[in-house]
Image (cartoon, rainbow, N blue to C red; front, side, top):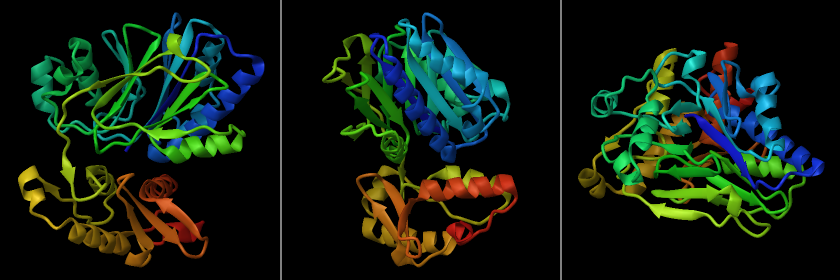
Length: 353
């Protein structure tokens, strides 16, 4: 589970007030995105002065570096209008600075949330050996003009942000297993995006960015945001459908959790994968009830405290004591933090708060 976030702004220069608001909101989104991965951080400034900045620091510390600051300050230039941010939870490739996102592969600069499962096959198909599986996706995008052709041989989960050739067009897309949200702030002529809608909403609330609608991007659509077409009303986004058959899981849970806990030697959680034919013959209500019981046994709380949001494809836990609702991703983020601090417990994640 990684996080992608960033912005695309109109070439119209910011006022100082607009710049300050954008900087603060982006900083908050970047900080909150750490819960989706803390093995490394990175941000790309795209335009006349394109640069990639990477670090092994978690995002909450990366935002205080000269590299991050340089990327954000590039927005003051009329020729740098896009920032691509990423927080990494490593699943393939060593945790070293060069393996942090974003990546530049040919004419593509991009960041990826997800996994490639047929790595060896795609390395042979693309004739490219990559230390990080995400680079294979950007290699395919670089080599193909049609997005469907780029994805056709992959067995992968993905949400992507990338720029290809034209530094004024931000591309965003996702398949069904990876979330991605956008919000266009008309007063700033700026599009914000993130892997979690709560990150955007929290940042807007904190800095009084009012009346901004947060939208979940639809699966299997390539969204092209040309910043030269941004107005004080809308983005004039262009949408292109593409074909991609996603993996089908028994819930929103996937093998990131399996890799995480096997790496740290904690737990014995089972993850099932069904092909399309067998999945059609399964009672989905039974699956939800089984997952509710499993989540209760693994994380704590009673089964009745766990709720599945079908629209968001996400599990949530209701903590009766605090009267707060937490997504499973937030709980995993707390566990990851606990592992780093040597304090992880198998149950009652929020009992320590």
